[in-house]
Amino acid sequence: MPINTQTVIVFMMLLVILPTVQAAVCFAHSPGKNSGLPLTAAFEPKGIASGDYDALSRLINTAQGFWEGVATETVCKGDVGAPIEEKHEYKVDAHATADYLPVEDTLVLNFQAAWEARTRKTGKPEDFQFFLTRQRLRLDRNIPAGEVQIMKVAKHFLAFYKKTNVRNPSGGVVTQEIVRSYLLTHNSLSVEYLSYSNGLLVSKSVWELHR
Image (cartoon, rainbow, N blue to C red; front, side, top):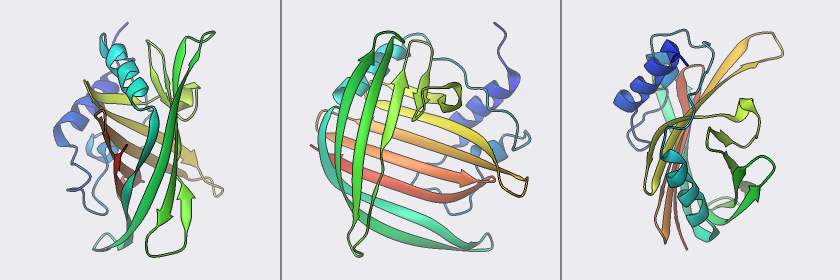
């Protein structure tokens, strides 16, 4: 099957220029904006590379259990010329379970996390699901719209990218992009999120969890 040129460009660009969550600054350009392609270009993720399935299935199985720790979330406000970083800290309690769907030959990770604000009496769920087959990885929805582009898989590490074009009530299109990474050992889990809207970084968060 021929490889889509757009997918290759975006994938290589992600590996070369993607900043870490800590280094990313508010309203920084997104991977899609830096790709040189139209921001609303269709997202066409590649399938899982040979050998990555075993590493991903081990990561899912190792993630099972109870976790606790902290999360720091940064919300970007102001404007591009004068960004304001609004930071919030949360206490995190989480529980992860793995299931297998034999009919679909799919391994599922259900990760349920509750964030409780340290300085405000507020909380929120931060749940996610992975759906893994030998051909693909999906986030939250086990349909083609849930597919992600894997950036890197290692023994205890996963990083991926996802882009969605959402039509708003006025008829315009909002391009939403995310980059997430997971570093997992037996007793610790670090999760990093970057969220972009219309080509600009609008929020970032770092979780530091332990068993």
